[in-house]
Image (tube, rainbow, N blue to C red):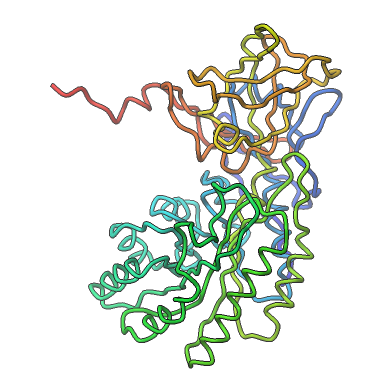
Length: 442
């Protein structure tokens, strides 16, 4: 498979003007770097961007997104592979459109994500619909759109899809997501492959379910799938799960039940602090060896690995407060903007937009939300004062998509950087936006 070069399309907006078309030859590097003492994303100064777009603000690097996607394409080049971007990681329409124009497939978990993919230029036939709780309305929506495949996760869901397909007199395309009972060795909130997790069909029961699908006139068995968790940094659990799924494929074929694809999920971790992410070339080579000579299309579902490093949360210091032995920098971003530290005790690097010497005393970076959990970063050696701009790094995955209006706070703006240019791809919410859906009962 040939590496595709990133494409560009004029007409995205920067204060009402078209973005300049940038070079397709982009360096594979982290998008955050200092230029003459000021932090930049690609060639755009975050100081300038904050002045124009305000804070808090999510900033995404087009080059980083495209490079990360193409790295997956290259790693799986020897295989017949579909790189299905996991939309839940970052569902901004501009991000989805970049990936659609590169030829990406998509992994979704809701009807809303399907609609986002379609509006961004993706094809329903290139979409895999995962998730344990697909509603009747979502099943109907996906069948009407011509979904590429449902990853089913229970016998009850199978019956619901079969009924919907019978009513339409069509055959619904299905893959069976199995639970291989493999410990992903990650945070328990993002582990999905153990038998106590809600996801998938026990692998011991999968062959019977596949036979049931193959016998139905309204269902079409396309593949088997697994996904054991997220932020995985060890190859061992992945290879164990892949091996179990491929053994299932062999057993099915021995029974005369053929499948066209195997979906190996996603979950490859990134470096937030001191993790050692899995090398994509090693990972792709391992998959190639495991699949061997089997006639199978391989699906993978990366999300975090494509967008995490591409995103930065830009925030400004409001106050600095000393209290007994504790020091706090209160910033205008909060847990409603970036939930990961409160939810997972996650680490994000924090960089001053204007380069300076480190402080000698540690300080906690906290938000204005009325919760003690509203801590974005603990014990950082940063010299901060009111007005200091900060960049919270590696926030492109599970950042804005998990944000909320808690404390009636408007959600942040989102900006896409393209070399020297940038555009607001989601404007900052207003209070009117929040209140538009509500009414006072008379």
